[in-house]
Image 1 (spheres, helix red, strand yellow):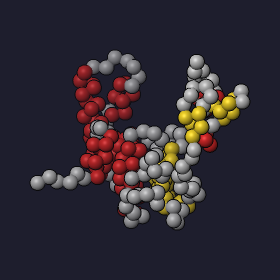
Image 2 (image 1 turned 90 degrees about the vertical axis):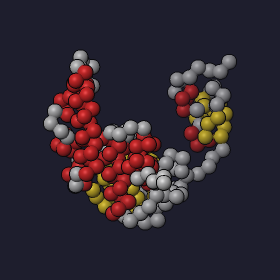
Image 3 (image 1 turned 180 degrees about the vertical axis):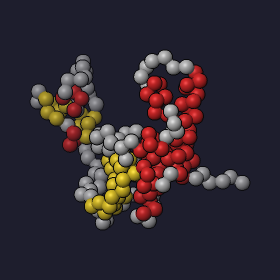
Length: 206
């Protein structure tokens, strides 16, 4: 008999591997669903605002069904492990932020030092790589099971959400020839230009 995958298994399958980043995105999404007694967003009734583009966002997409395609996953490039979930109907939600230093605090001894060594570009022994993988797996399990208050700051918030996603006509860029959503088009030398061509990053089409 085929057993249905757990939410964690679905997140891992979507992301492609197990890691601490996926784990804290998973914990954040699960905490929102539990506290707000919510389910996956079938349309756009739930909006997720993420302030990072790292692994955790994949878990959030899987668990909440907030996606770029539906217009209810909003990315703000702030480089912060902060996730806000809110209801369009009430504008109420949760802001869940990873506490600074929380990963290092709960990680196995030596994880931080090995991580810094691996990503510094210096010479690393094979046994050190294997030990880091072991610590990485242990840290993932710790994040999945530690009391949520140890890793997250959680606040109830009121969010001014944008309107639902709209459909727009396309116009043709006069430089690269590609179609561009009308509200994103600029005007350059009397012709429509996509943002990329407007900034001069593309060569003109002959």
